[in-house]
Image 1 (cartoon, rainbow, N blue to C red):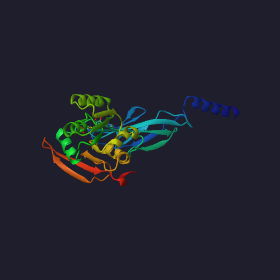
Image 2: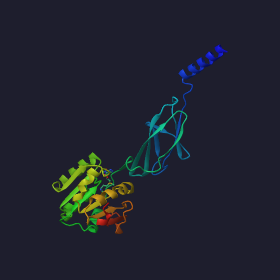
Image 3: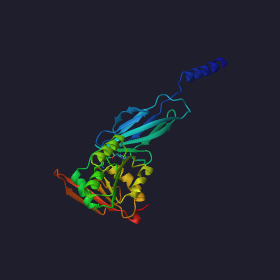
Image 4: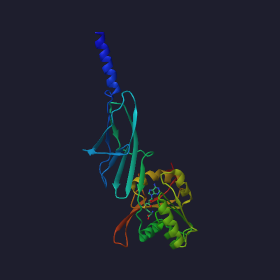
Length: 275
Ligand SMILES: C[S@@+](CC[C@H](N)C(=O)[O-])C[C@H]1O[C@@H](n2cnc3c(N)ncnc32)[C@H](O)[C@@H]1O
């Protein structure tokens, strides 16, 4: 009998040493499925296959009782100009079956990048008209691209100053070069900056007019920052996109020189908007 018990303990120890009591865990992930392109989900940098709207990742065999943390990331393209990166971490133990929901945004963790699509010159002119830009105005463009929304009002309407930020250093250089070529580099200031970073946005406090073309996702994230930082009375005009739930005072459609219709939204910052 004693020999049998010793034998069983030995088998258990050998089994454990060989990793036989290790077990995998599964992480079942929900994410927005389809936009402009299919969503990609990665765990620790490796793409996971989608099946019927979920992505299931099986971990390697994990030691019992220990915790393991995996980095999960969804790459979402809701349209052909916006890329959202939604990173999360999930901690599991051997044998766990956990669910992770990546369908909702986390304002602190999610990154949103909108690619450069320029506003046509004549539509910039329409936006300037709507904002009634004059010689005393300081214009701010968050996500300024090649700075067309700053250079044109400064050059054509004699606006006092243009300030732009862009997250892409190549766009910043392009905008600075264009301001030089157009002879307005003294009045047009372009800096590298992220509109989701309040410190980078602080520069907008000087503005009397804001011209924007940035997409729904970034617009919604930026709206409370603009409302907080802009002076009451500042006029805001956005090409095509609304700014989250900030209700515009006016929305109008203008016909472009290319024959297309362009929607413009107009707000004036009120004391009560300030959060
Ligand atoms: C649609 S383009 C608009 C450019 C310009 N305002 C216009 O109307 O011609 C958006 C620009 O925003 C920049 N951008 C995207 N995400 C940004 C972010 N988080 N912070 C600052 N700029 C950003 C892009 O690099 C791009 O140049």
